[in-house]
Image (cartoon, rainbow, N blue to C red; front, side):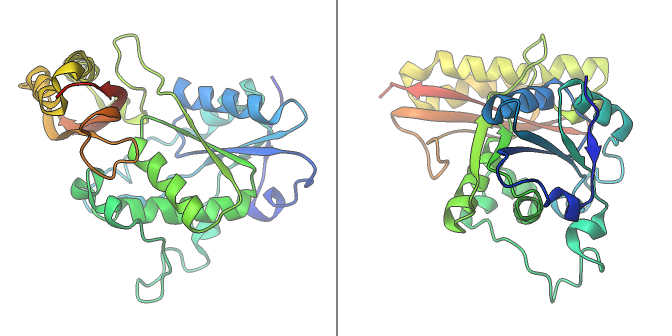
Length: 283
């Protein structure tokens, strides 16, 4: 275990330029999925490099009626987890440090990152404005942390896809690295929101990874058959927002070849998302 530095934005920027740096951006409430990202980050920069973890619940990516106020905040436990993983810096700013002295300024003057058409699809349908808020804060944190690598989990696959697109379009000098989804023993993707689930809801939520596997088992029959198989598994357990097979870049439906099957839905009051890679080989 090593002590971590708890730094403000100006000090975070002052790291020696000769040390490679990787950042893991989180909203806190850290779990094994986040810790796996920290370990992946360390493998990229080596023992001589720096691993930075940002711990910030971003209000700009929560819509009206979402769980911003209730979102779990466990900073002391988060710092302990970072120490255990050998993280060098934890950056846990308040809202004004990220967005300026007039936090979440008047929308008439606010400058944000437009996610484009993909930001209005899939998650964007149920959560309008979410990806604009997410990309804006990620862009700000790139500027603050000045990292060589940025690690994000594949569970939030649309988020990962949009961040990669932003980095390419805006020529941001950072390598975005996706890391495989970490799962609970029942297959449920690890998420900070899993703590909201009751025992009965948790059993229902486990239908989501089963649905993804059911879809993959039908990959030889084509995308439509895959979606039907997933929906059959979810029926009566999850209030489905979407279930789609798309190309890896999410630009459109997949016909044949590499693809992603993506599912989102509500279990009780908790919204869950998940996805898996698949090769569609059907008609």
